[in-house]
Length: 124
Image (cartoon, rainbow, N blue to C red; front, side, top):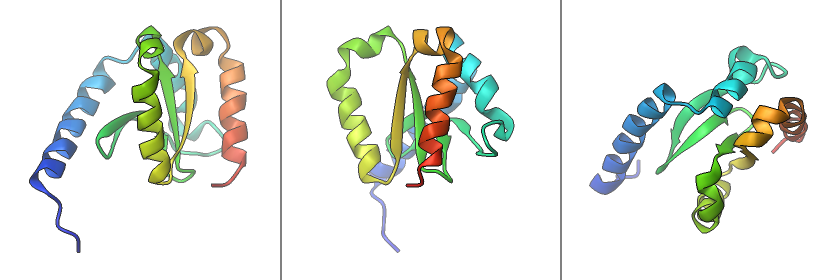
């Protein structure tokens, strides 16, 4: 069994605390998408919200499909390098990342739903 460093343990604990706070303060777009993802409403796939994955917190995670769905607001327009690094780290650990803008979720939920369904149809 691998021994984890104290920093790694601390990072995981901080991510868990952060995830709990994020579940209480979801954006309107996250809340709207969650209503459609929860309770296995998408082809029986179970999604969880605000889940710690390593040093990050995923907006929505389907562990069975190894799929992370991120809903990004305007602050992410200036954070593309950081988002790309995050997506690369998650990909290296076997996750597929699907990103949507807040306005896309709020204005075109059916399109978002279809895109997530099409990603789920392709097995990792």
